[in-house]
Length: 228
Image 1 (cartoon, helix red, strand yellow):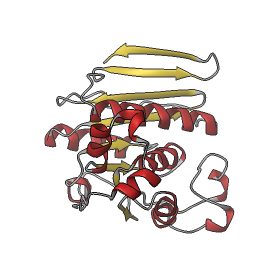
Image 2 (image 1 turned 120 degrees about the vertical axis):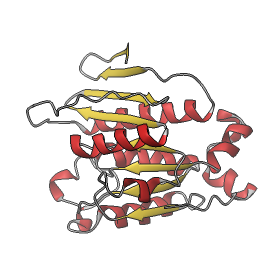
Image 3 (image 1 turned 30 degrees about the horizontal axis):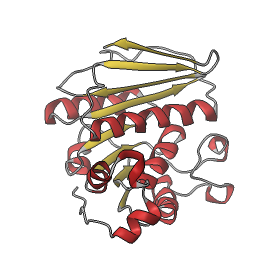
Image 4 (image 1 turned 60 degrees about the vertical axis):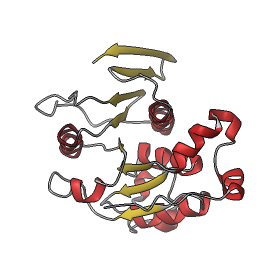
C-alpha cells in the first residue's frame, strides 16, 4: 500500500509539526516526506502513533482489534464510548484531529506474513508496537527480505525495550519464549513509545544507533544498552 507524500505548507509546518529549531529544518523536511508503518495501536502503539503524527510523519497504521474497556487504563487513543469499535478507525480519527498536517491511513485488519508486504511496501520504515510473537516474527521476516529498517519496541511490566534494526539483522528467538501474563503500567508503554520515536528521529538523521537494544527499567529508573 502506497501513501502519497504531499509536502505540507509552511503554515501547517509551523502549526502542527515540531518547531524547526528542535531538529533542524532539513530534518523536519525529511520527516514530512517519510512514510512510517505502525503495526499495533494498543498500549505502546497509541503513544507511538501520537508522537509520529505530532511530528509530521505520514502514517500507515494497522490493528485488527476492537477497543476493550479493560485496556483503557493504558491505551491513550481511546475513550469508554469507543468500546467495541475498531481501533484502527478510532485511532485514525483521533490522530487526524491531533495532527491535520499528517496523512494517515488506517488498516482495520490483523497483520500477518501473507499481507504485510501489500500493506507496508510503501513505507520507508516500520515501527513494531505489537504484543504477540507471531506478528512480530512476520515483521522481522518481511523487513529482512525487503531490506527495510524497523524499530522493535516492547513494554512488559516495568521494563521498556527498543532496538533499531537495519542491515538485514534478526533479533527474535526462533521459538516464542514462555512467560507469565504481564501487568504492564501505562507509564511503561509511554516510555517504550518515547524511546522508539527517539530512535526514529535518529534514523531520519542518519545516526548510527542500530546494533544495540536499549532497556529502561522503571522500577530502578535505569537505562542500559546491550549489543545485539
